Amino acid sequence: AQSVTQLGSHVSVSEGALVLLRCNYSSSVPPYLFWYVQYPNQGLQLLLKYTTGATLVKGINGFEAEFKKSETSFHLTKPSAHMSDAAEYFCAVSLSGGYQKVTFGTGTKLQVIP
Amino acid sequence: NAGVTQTPKFRVLKTGQSMTLLCAQDMNHEYMYWYRQDPGMGLRLIHYSVGEGTTAKGEVPDGYNVSRLKKQNFLLGLESAAPSQTSVYFCASRQTSGVAKNIQYFGAGTRLSVL
Image 1 (cartoon, rainbow over the protein chains, first blue to last red):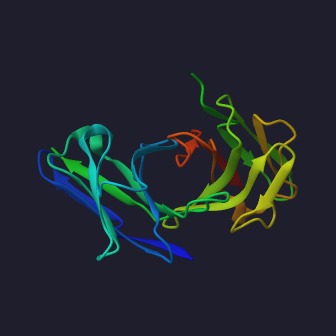
Image 2 (spheres, each protein chain N blue to C red; image 1 turned 180 degrees about the vertical axis):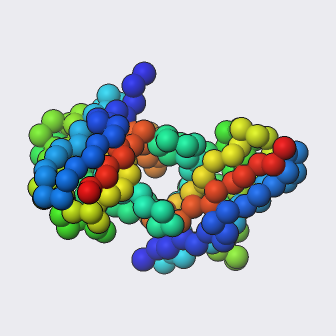
């Protein structure tokens, strides 16, 4: 079984401030972890993913996330928020193999204040 | 460079009407998925397909049927629409090998309202 918890359905940051979106997961086996971004009226787009190897993963648009097994976390960060980062962000977990059932978190809406 | 294309983009139905949502992908992906997105609930898997001619139930399959007659197309049907099926529907696909095999590619969504 697998599950994802995203802390905070809404997060507001000032332009130029640090972005931190929290994600904790539960998985019975080593997971694959993802962050997706959804802009208004669009589908989901992959930001970054962790499967194996380096635990600090860099994605598009300056985002990165660190897989911390001991904390079962995969938090998303960006050093300096830009207005264009305003969107909804989804953390997701899956197990390897099979049809790869992906479990999505409930999403965090990021607001960037000028 | 189309990727995953969903039609229609918007639809309004009356309770009891039927309709079919079409998903088409041009990436030769084996796996295809239908999700629904509701506020505060993330994405929930309705049905999926691991190849042409095969389909399986996801988390919330009731009230929906699917077909995968061609590899590139995955159809989602509502035989008798209910207000509870008001949602945004997303199709996704993924390949089964290569460096991108763990990535799902999403369409832009279909916004369905059932009155």
